Image (tube, each protein chain N blue to C red):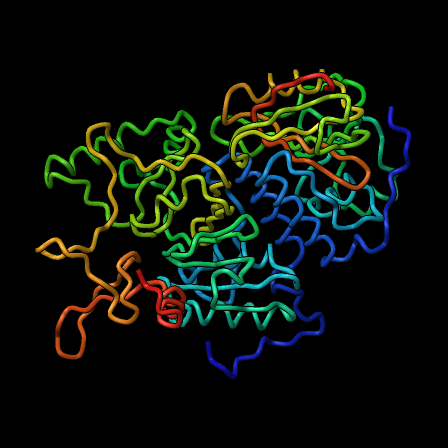
Amino acid sequence: MNSNYELPLEDAGYSFGFLDEYAKKEVRRCILKAIAIPGYQTPYASREMPMGRGFGTGGLQITLSLIGVQDTLKVIDQGSDDSVNAVNLRQFVQLTCPGVDVTEKTEEASLLQSRHRIPEKPLTEAQILILQVPYPDALVVVEASEARRKIMHAEADYSRLLVKLYEDIVHFDEITISHRYPTRINGHYVIDPSPIPRWDVPKLHQSKALVLLGAGREKKIYAVPPYTLAEPLVFDDIAFRVEDFRDATGVRHACRCCGSTVSFLDEFSNDQGMVAYQCSDSAYCEEQQQTGSAA
Amino acid sequence: MLNEMINCSPAIWQPMLQQQVFRGLLDGFSYPGRIVACADSETTACLAILIALIDGETTLADPQQCLNSALWAKLETRPCISEKAAFILLDGTQLADLNPCIGTLETPETGATILLRVGALHPDSSGNLRLQLSGPGIETTTSISVDGLHPAWITARQEWVSVFPLGVDLLLCDEHHFVAIPRTTQIKMGDAA
């Protein structure tokens, strides 16, 4: 966001949290139904936000409907507090919600809005995680019609999705989905858990914190309530596995900054063209560096 | 029949307070069985919840006329028969002959939210009707007890929620507290210990 940007001032001004109270009430009603029906994509009237659809407007509308002056907000994008999407959204909330504190420390936040990662540090009952979702429906890869997808979801009919996974095993000896891994919530609805890596999927299972997922463009809100079953879709004889970050010799890569061998790593090339690994969760990495207690 | 007046403080019409009432609701629905103190201690809990959630886009049924016409005007919503309403406000001490909307398979979110006014909610077993709850949002099981809730409500509710995802979501409200019981919660009923 342009640091000189100001909200256009009209006579009426803007309410706390940018959204008008009617919009917030509608989002709030949808959130409660989404929690009551775990994994069900509750439709809502996604509002125009002063940023493009696809920049986290779904997550932002949830955050703005939840937030109050007693809250402390953390916004992350791919694990980082400092990337463009996170900085933009955080600045927007600061601009429109006077009195709200922001933080980069996971444990200090009461609300966490995230794009594509769940923090390394386990969340607590006092926290709520809000995930930005580009594609809410796990069935979209096997069925183009939303009307038919809704019936399939209602009947918990995921046979075609399982066939898709089976085809992967036939072709590649492995299910090749790296992120957005279809996950069954409370034994019924299968959700697209947003583009979190496989690494983060087990964190949804029996999570202490409420997880809310918002898709602004697709106009859907869904939830994984605390202490709820969240099972990645697998076969009895092929277990679900997460990224293991081992090299050809079986040694696990360590973060080049903090040395951690237990976190989710980003892979990139350094200045010398060598492959380097670094914690994706920047707040976790910094804390490890400061305490020097990296495992 | 609960004869107590429904109280309403002017402050509850402020968005900031409604936000806090909603956060209490979010807490309650996330952790069913948790007795949540309503953020506004001067407004009857069931009314504070309605004010925080209702506008002209949704419907409310009040078959026992708990709300006066001045409140109806401020809620900005239209009265609706209880078979079709999104929100239903009722007295929990007596069983009403109710046939609420439980949604359809494709649109289960249209199942009603039923607010039952009860005498008192207890986190222990000191109330008349003991409820043991389990399901999403509850780590193992949790128990509450309630004064002034007709057991037939729980029996009727079991019927309404028997085919997931169809069902109704309950809010038990005493004067200043509420407990959410979404359709996924399993209830075992027991008498007072």
